[in-house]
Length: 297
Image (cartoon, rainbow, N blue to C red; front, side, top):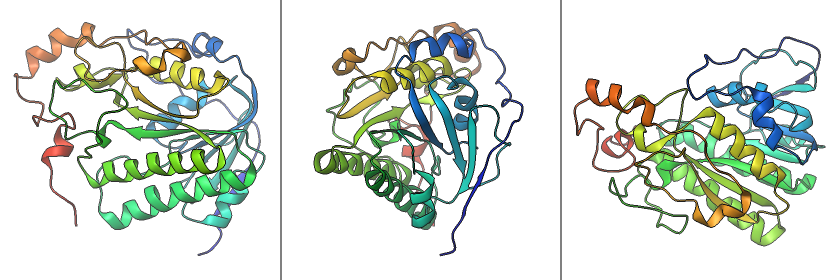
């Protein structure tokens, strides 16, 4: 496989901010929570929806943000490095992680896809990243897992980090693989990981299901900050969800982080319930439409 890693530096305008919402917060406020400065933080998947959002709001969490994606992203600004890299290319990934202290791993196919596509991006890419991190002496990874690792639990069932994993899709299976790989690399090599089972991270919840699963961008940034600054995390599983009244997930085991989500889906409930009839979430299972869909060829 040809080497696919292209590093660029320079000065550019910061990435555009998303449209403010009633639960939005300025980046400098959220980043007051990030007190443990690190030298270089690698962010994979920096060209995706979450990656573009965290790019601006994680400035200040490290002296340098190293941003990477398989596609072109906007040029490097102050305190940034931009590296185009295919995570399926092992040698390129080894170069990518060099001199990094921590990694925020967002890079993946984030929807259901056929197995061959997921094999390259989500399985092989994640393995290459962990193995390169081990060789480079990286201390900590924040792995963007997903609620779809437990998507076949019934709606309304309360789950904690010990709940049986019941993936609702091949995508969910790929995230189970990532969590297990993280467990192996902690037990065998001491490489710490926080596996964030992200709910539905958007400016605002879009449907009835998201009244339970919504994670506000502000809460996502503050959760990342708490994980970065924690003295030790081991292998930690967390649910990325805001303080929603009807949430199905508990983070009681992780109170030591001091993370308290600030936002809730309640301000959006009336409008969502008016436009969407009860029972329209797409499934009786927590994974929603992922659980109801078939396997893609």
